[in-house]
Length: 51
Image (cartoon, rainbow, N blue to C red; front, side, top):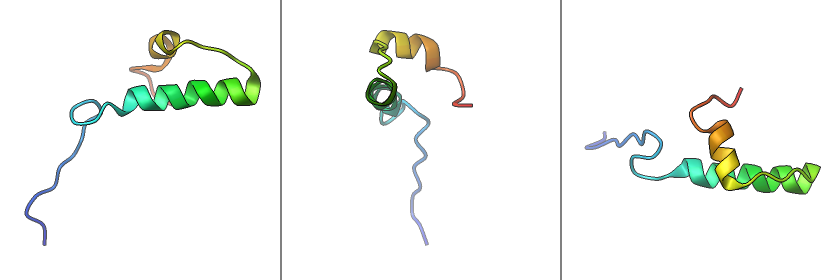
């Protein structure tokens, strides 16, 4: 079986929230010509569900 299982609660081992927001901002720009700074992305989306 397994000797060890590591669960990464976002930001503990890998800061995936920054990468996800950068990708989302890029998508919004490419698809809809909608520009948001990374700071605005964090202000708007960090700490909220994707729904």
